[in-house]
Length: 267
Image (tube, rainbow, N blue to C red; front, side, top):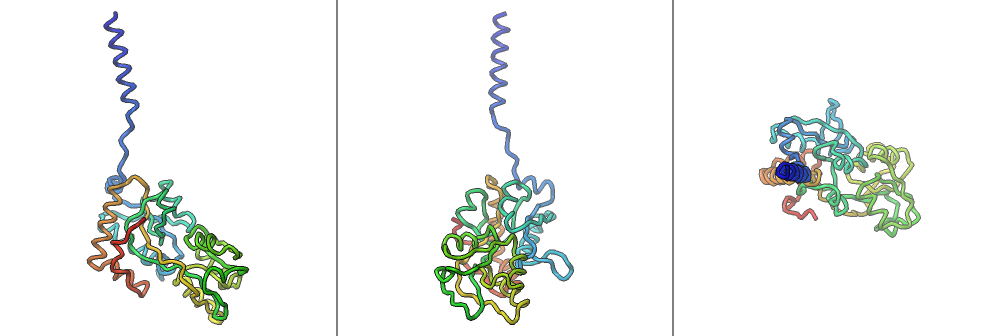
């Protein structure tokens, strides 16, 4: 009887110990390869980076980066179309495997998602009509400036232009419409968007007043996926070295990527 009781206690203790061991975490790279599909989050309507082409299919440097990546991985792409403000939450909530959407690598974002090494760059600027005297953040005091919500532009203007009236729009397309319609004449955005605005307001051209920051752009992925991150980093290094990424980027942007881009720190 005592032997049976001891055995039962030992069995219960062993079961408890096994229950306390965490289940093995699935590896996202393995899951992608098994599914033969990678879910890529993109923000369509971002000139030069991701937009609908003449055939109404997605294109742009971010879209083509994702296509090249998927081809080399040997999987199909499933596009997850999102808004600018939803970029980080989409990765946090697992609605996409990776995000290729002109997302700048910042310390704040690195607290909640991981990034690949940089694959592209982006200047973020303040632009206004020719006669507007703006050289730095101080000159924005008392002025109305439009920008896209939840971007580095938003963070920088909010932190440095305390006296400005900031008008936030939910996405780049809405910001462009606001600039074209005259709702805002001063904007914080990127050069490709300024070019698009100027096409639609030829008599009220916007000019770059100052560059706020050159951003290194990274492919975002969930935290805790070292195999996926290592694959992405290796892929970027190889395609920077063989010229595939720079050539494709120049096709859309008409400028070269920095030669040291893949070696830049992401912190």
